[in-house]
Amino acid sequence: MRDTVTPTHCPYCALQCGMNLTPAPDGRAVEVSERADFPVNRGALCGKGRTAPAVLSSSVRLTSPLVRSEGGALVPASWEEALARVAGGLGRTRAEYGADAVGVFGGGGLTNEKAYSLGKFARVVLGTSQIDYNGRFCMSSAAAAGGRAFGLDRGLPFPLEDVPRTGCVILVGSNPAETMPPSLRYFTELRENGGTLIVVDPRRTKTAEQADLHLAPRPGTDLALALGLLHLVVAEGRTDEAYIRERTSGWEETRAAAMAHWPEYVERITGVPVPELREAVRMFCEPEAAMVLTARGPEQQSKGTDTVGAWINLCLATGRAGRPLSGYGCLTGQGNGQGGREHGQKADQLPGYRKLTDPAARAHVAEVWGVDPDSLPGPGRSAYELLDALGTDIRSLLLMGSNPVVSAPRAAHVEERIRSLDFLAVCDVVLSETAALADVVLPVTQWAEETGTTTNLEGRVLLRRRAITPPEGVRSDLEVMHELAARLGGDRNLEKGFPTDPEEVFEELRRASAGGPADYSGITYRRLAEENGVFWPCPAPTDGPLDAGGPGTGTETGTGVGTGAGAGADPRGADGTGRPGTADG
Image 1 (cartoon, rainbow, N blue to C red):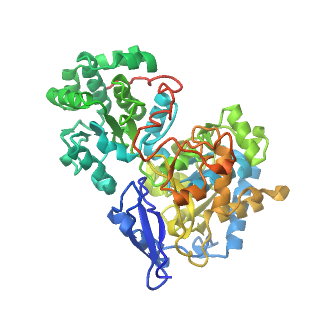
Image 2: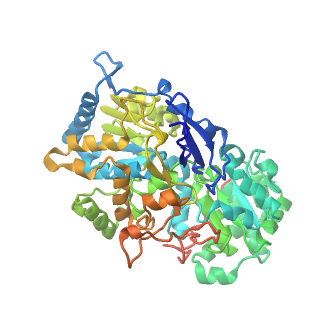
Image 3: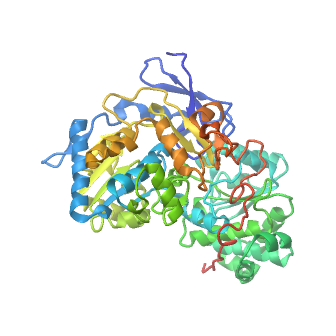
């Protein structure tokens, strides 16, 4: 119906902007309109969001499975033939070389339901430890630094609407004016409210042009810059000694690293003049509240984890973590980069951010899955290591929602490794550069053709709704895993553990995540349909049914609850403030 409007979310970046979809007059596409009720973008959409329906066109996508012919070309095939070939290829490798000779590679654009099912599929159906996803190329340094400092990997521990209400923001290695345009309003409002914006970027970007202070360090010297700022914080007596004493550990080691980076030395390394260093410290420390937000710039460096850790230490030393309108956050990039790693795509994690090496975590998830905990494989290789092992230790690969021939580090080398595989199966919407190398390509549904949840950069779990019917000949990734589980499971009836209804998958995800750091057990499709997202962790109430829902730790009131390790948590996390790094220029 022309008057049917579906409220949903953009498929692209981690803002997951709200939008409305209305069937186009021809009935074969949708039109995008603003959705002002969603608090993240408040109706604003960038060019990618407004043109997102273009990728739904059947003229630019696959609508039939493709298999490699004897002549070497990819030719159309039935779903039965294609699925049989995938099951045969993966099964032969497993039988001949062992389960870990089969790899699984996912993507940060998959819904939570798909990411969860893919992790379960790898470990239960294939029995392999060799699973990871392209989110490793995004913010893994920030994830490691956040885990080290706070005991938790989370993009923003506060909603974006807190940004205009703080006193100062240091934005490190990010250009939201071009990468996340709807978010720029928050930084504009910050300045309108009397706050200040410091942008750290070697380039004079559109975002840097709007800053009160632009620090332009030489590429690769962000670590020295952060340590130099911390040096000045100490030297000028701006540390929060009570906070450091009561809520952190490792301060003496961190302080020593900072004091080795005196201003003139840092200026020689970074090229940032000493007066600008001093001005940045003044702007950051004088307000009652302040934030540091990092992105790919400092994270994708050879010492990315130490670099992010140094910026976190700046927040901790000044008492800015775990307090209202203050703290450290990471601007996650991919659409579901946050949720995509929370529930099992990462090589070392089980659903709910549980560690695969934790016996209690294994027991909990194994019970939900109906398997023996001892049957679950241990941690496998991380993303690049996995890709680098293709054709040697890993002989076959199932790839879903990624195009590593284009996006992976050392892409030419990765392409060489992919070409050396015994078997490659790809699930994708189009014939990507990686899919063109596959033995089997399976055409799958995409954002407006399926329902599922995503988790944006704030940790806000959202419901992305189906608005149109997918083209004939296309199936969902959940259907693919269901069918492959039936073919690879023998007489174990494993397909029963892989439902094709996304809400049914989410109900199991809730149980599997219950009690974990990323607890979704109090979130339901009903709540997501009625509310503008629910922040995790959101445990189910202890004195009521699981479907009663919980309050969530984040709110739209902008309190900053959940900063660092979560509401009420000690920001020291597992092992203190984080280890300092040393700069070598």
